[in-house]
Image 1 (tube, rainbow, N blue to C red):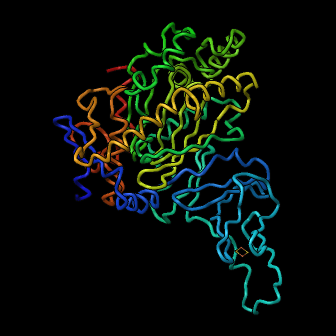
Image 2 (cartoon, protein in one colour; image 1 turned 135 degrees about the horizontal axis):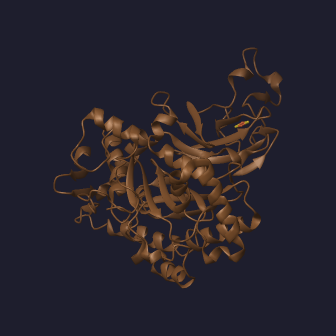
Image 3 (cartoon, helix red, strand yellow; image 1 turned 90 degrees about the horizontal axis):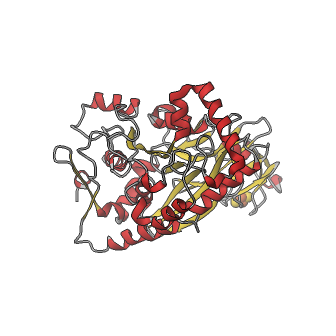
Amino acid sequence: MDIQDLIIDDRKRGVFRVHRSCMTSSDLFQRERELIFDRCWIYLGHESEVERPGDYRRRTVAGRPLFFVRGKDGQIRVFFNSCPHRGATICRRDAGNAEVLRCFYHAWTFNTRGELIGVPRREAYGPDFDPSELGLKKPPRVDSYRGFYFVSFNAQGEDLVTYLAGGRDYLDLVVDQAEEGMRVIPGSNKYAMKANWKLLAENSLDGYHLIPTHRTYVDYMTGLGTDDSGDTLAARPPGAGRALGNGHCVSENIARNGRPIARWHPIFGEEARERIARVRERLVQKYGEDRAYRMADTSRNLLIYPNLLIMDFVAISIRYIEPVSPDRMKVTAWHLVPREESDAALTTRLDSYLTFLGPGGFATPDDVEALESCQAGFRATEAEWSDISRGMLTPCPGTADELQMRGFWRQWHANMQGLDTTDVQDGPPATSQAAAASSEAGDPGHCRTGER
Ligand code: FES
């Protein structure tokens, strides 16, 4: 099948379908590597993970082994985790601190700037052996936004801020909740699924599945009582699904589960009431009522295309999807918290995360089952298409609609055809000029959360 035929996007009839080979084909998987992961900005890690000189973190990004390390000068540098001598991985642990980095194979040694500073039996090399040519290699481009570090293996192309399009505003909404900045707390959750990586990108934005798939959790939370609004999780309004340009998307809800910065819920305990009210007041003072409302009274699942999710409900989790093969992915989750928060508030956030999104929580095992079930269903190759049309003719799609997934898929489809920009919104196809403007603006801007 031609690449251009993999998606049916009939905006007049409100029909959007994705050919299931997109989730099963090895050729398409390889093409994704080249046209998406080798060209987009891909998430690496958060600056707070390496606070002290010598702190390092090991990552796999777009299939490459990398690590980042903070130098004595305070600068964060990113290197390929491959020894310039014969290729061994230098960073052998996920996290650590080191003054120098020594390859275990033949003991070449590097400083945190990546310079080769030690070669055993150096005298055996000829006069043209030049250590300055044999430092650790760096990815072509590294940049950060509000503490989030990204790499690009494409030496050309738009800068990170432009790339983030409308996703930038949502990252600001997350980061600005903290008075003293955000930090990633040590540790992570790792798990794997026998499913294509794009199914989790979809699922992470999908409000349609909440009640049927996570009924047990919804019943559990309903049984605990209501937040200050008096509504339960099950009674929440439709929220808003938005395509933010460049494939970034968000599923935005009016919080119905409490927010540690705005809405009290029984899970926080009586003693937290005053603190929560204080935080909300600070946000109103600093950012005004409207922006404080967006930060504090709405929650969001934000996809930074192609494979980073920020899930900001009670806990704030960073979910990183690593495609392994057409039918397998690895997932890592970290937790982002305001630096100033007390241990008690942190405990509540972590409990909430583990209860819902943790690998053994109410949600993740349900989702793993659902996505692996979809992947198994794709073996029925005669059933060729998945339908993602919900809410396509709705003026203001909610989170249970699927605009946010169509935004992802439209960008994916454009990239797979070698195009950088496309019109990711529903409605009549825009001109390329309007598509660029829409990409920059990030969303149509006419739908308030909860409006239909
Ligand atoms: S491969 Fe690293 S020192 Fe030989």
